[in-house]
Image (tube, rainbow, N blue to C red; front, side, top):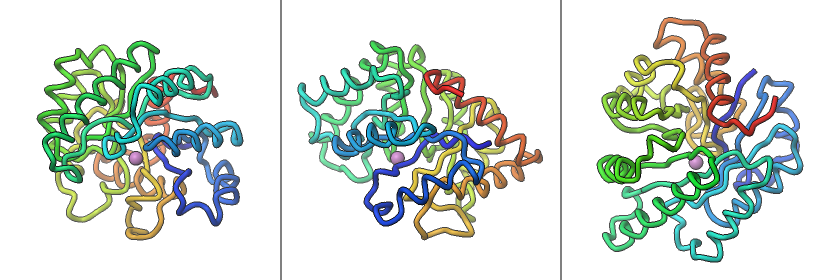
Length: 259
Ligand code: NI
């Protein structure tokens, strides 16, 4: 059975068939799903999904592109609700300098990334980190706050294989999804082949980043076997070994997820 560590089923792209799709997960071998908040509304929707589906768990946090949603009041809301039994992580949080070039806003991203990391530390929850075009600042900030004491995953890992190893040394997991199946993803293929299998998590980031052969279409957890197959091929092991090991990894990291 597959553990899906990063999905956005609150996204409006799922409005037409969300119920039908989620109800078909278990029969297709998807055992557990973490729905990850990005803005404030999606955090609220995430909580609803965790109530509606036994196998759906939630992560609460504000994405760097949505920090306009954060203030002391919404931060307090996160703190309250992250204590719920089915909220298993703080995320997604981090830095995104691809979509945000304004230095002043980038500095606010760093402020709220730090605050949400401290929230995870306070609540003893793992973090789900989004970092794009901000490799150096992410690492510097994390070292500065001793992030090695806070367990977590670097989701949709997009940096060098060397940086992946550095995160692994800090105790972090590497989230790998559909991009690994793309022909031009040389760096990520190298990462997927070389980081310890015990540190890899399977994820979709759906509705985005569908793997080959469905690239460009709406993504869902049902595409995860393509990701597992690619990682298996890169490492010369079986797809089953990838699925079983990444499942154990996710259960180790997201300790509040029940089986
Ligand atoms: Ni995401």
